[in-house]
Amino acid sequence: GTVDGNYIYVNAMAKIAGTRGDCVALIDHTDNPDRPLNASNYESIHYILNNEGSNFRISEQYDSYTAMITPWVNVTCNGVYADKTNMIAPGSFAYLSALAVSIKTNANWLAVAGVARGLVPNIIELHTTQVLTNAIAESYQSEPAGGTGISINPITRIRPYGYCIWGNRTLRYNKISRVGFATGFLNLRNMVSDVKKTVYKAAQRLMFEQNNDILWINFKALITPLLDSMVSGYGLSGYKVIKNPTNDKTRLSAIIKLYPVYAVESFEVTVILSDEEVSVE
Image (cartoon, rainbow, N blue to C red):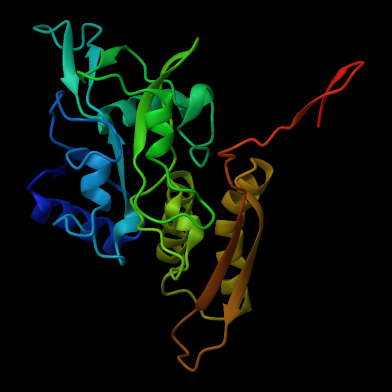
């Protein structure tokens, strides 16, 4: 999907992802390398998304099922396309490329961001006239606790590692009165999608079985291996699978409570200089 006029498509993608409930729509803005990058500039993507007067607004029902990576990038093709040595690709391509590398060795509920898992492979440079500095990248992210607005996941050069995705947010519009803090993080949204897909497969597997205690045991047996792996893989600190009472004798009703582990987004370190030594607290 694109931003800068095609809002109908953006909202359609968000609605599809939100209605399914088990996927994320990656929204790309149009490729304009001369676009200002400063978040306070009214022509910047961050300002457009956060300006109350903008036409861009995804319904709060679906906005946490979307994410945006900026800017577009110039990447090498590595012989994949016979007629091209390099191409200009959207931010979503950069994210999916980094994800493809990460999931070879990492769980897909870990954030595809930072120098460990967010390095963009085969990148030549950002397709921008201005430099997307680390400071600008930081300004695209609202404060996770108490911050307001919409966050974008920028690609910036982190020395000495290279260009990497420096954000782990969905396009959820944060405001103090809105609940649902966890859905503002892209890796947690992806983790919930994995749980939903596993639950769906378990339900399909057990459909038309006898509705008794054995069914409940079998249902839990099909979903707890994934949940246990998320706990051991530091995606969750814990979980609960609760059976709901229901008057419908043909229905099995359950609640799955997930307690996520959040990815760190800031460090607070105090350096104290004393007369005899330097200590870090």
